[in-house]
Image (cartoon, rainbow, N blue to C red; front, side, top):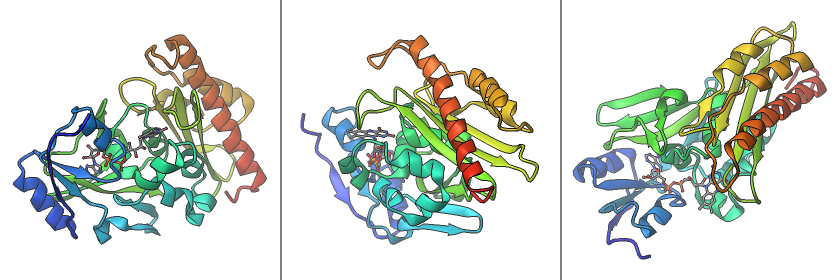
Length: 292
Ligand SMILES: Cc1cc2nc3c(=O)[nH]c(=O)nc-3n(C[C@H](O)[C@H](O)[C@H](O)COP(=O)(O)OP(=O)(O)OC[C@H]3O[C@@H](n4cnc5c(N)ncnc54)[C@H](O)[C@@H]3O)c2cc1C
């Protein structure tokens, strides 16, 4: 189907983009990679009167470590994250997630922030970045607000963004020493959305017990969310087989049956993927002698 008619603007600053959003009184929409928005427009599930293309705003191209965080601006694509040495060497959770998102064509155009705003319950970045305890940086007429990702994602395809705000960047805490991360996903075929997806980020203390545990689930219900009971189960324990078995049992999800499989099968997959991710983290931390 052909999308309804729309105007197009390519502002050069965040301030201009916000003014355009305000001017349209909720009728304008931010365009990032267009990998979700354009298909929705073609199906007439969205019919914005104005598309505000943010990919030419230099401030939104920020992609660097600063003050204990990795800053990923709204114009940073999946492909940039995938090819970054900083990600490959320092953010194993993000690195293991990005290569199994969609296909190279989508990864070349789609953005991390666009994925988060789209808030697809099966989107991989929600699960990975919840595990990493990332926060969203939102800008609007009243200035900037920082929102933990748990609070940013409100419901299926819904965030707490107001119509006159945009997500300027996502900030991911830089993993400390004795940390490891991993992302596991089951998909029907390469490039598909997750049947089940689990992100894990673990930090051990000097004694080898779990200091902080993050576990994020996607395709686990109407919204990507943390497996809080499993995180609690891990905290303060050695990452041994007994702890991993207890954590996988606690990684409860509430998936629905669909063409990707029955609910019971999916529930079991969350258990399996949680254990796989935790074992991968343990192996990486052991192999690095605690320097990971
Ligand atoms: C064939 C295909 C397969 C895919 N497979 C996967 C997969 O396996 N896993 C996965 O996680 N994803 C998958 N995706 C989705 C993909 O990751 C998209 O890139 C992503 O959902 C949207 O990012 P985008 O930059 O293209 O956003 P857009 O499509 O441009 O925008 C999406 C929505 O977010 C809003 N928006 C975008 N950026 C901002 C911002 N900074 N501030 C405020 N609002 C904003 C837009 O207005 C729109 O409502 C797939 C997509 C396709 C087409």
